[in-house]
Length: 358
Image (cartoon, rainbow, N blue to C red; front, side):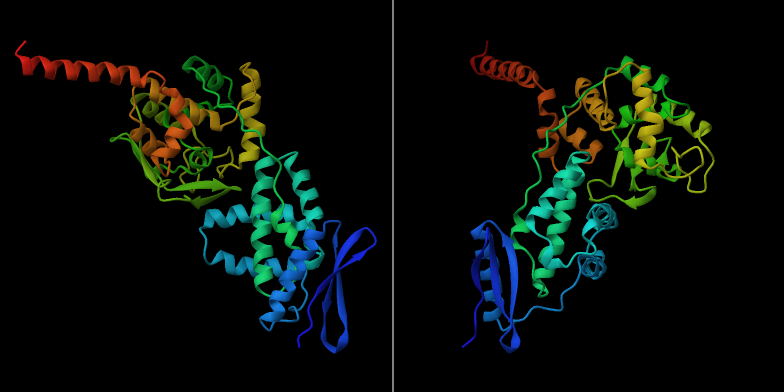
């Protein structure tokens, strides 16, 4: 008969007593919650029932992650892999830890520490950590099941801000030249920051007033768009064309053919651009703190005010579905039903008049 793991109270904590070969045992202290110990016990007993009574060779988080990353890279897009590398930088604090010693409390403490400065990064980091721990579990490593249930702190969504065109002009005028062109072009096309940094002259058809978005920028490198919707043709106006021509004349010559390169002719890093160019310009323009993404919101607001159909807005912005567009910008159409309602009344009235001959 196979021996089974059991839980034991040890002082103020619960521990799991796991049977090993030759009559030995492995003790794993879980914490103060009995339920967490029960879950770990059940997982160990599940493996015992499957004939995998004894865990794989214990590995550190860093050792396991290195081999996991090689497998992961084979099945994801380059942009997704680049995002994963960003999360792994935050997770490097666990590299020397044995996988089984990473407790839920340790994970939660680290997630909250990262979230204080970068809430979104903390969410992505936690998602990556859970993927790694699940993969480790599937390969016979002992993990703390409670770590898979850690949640990131609630993140307050930043309120959207929309600039009027005079404010856009003020911001662009206060931006170090020639990057005022980038500010205006962002508000006239709705391109994401990374898409602007990766925009190359060969993807632009000046005569047709159209450009192809095929890549973004991450960590100073050009990477393909993450979704098929992100790869798109964006049509731009005559004013945007004028801004673009000025930028092509003013930019630094560069081997990549970038439209908005750094002064040295390289691909911008987001943090560098925000610190050196964007935030100082916002302050000089006397505007409240502004995110670069608010320029994209400004474009959407200008398009709605100009009467753009939601489907056109979706195509221009590269949203994966119309639901994303309407959920994000639906509140910008407050008078839409009033106009449609009036048109419906006129249609019904006209058909009724024709039917009665009046």
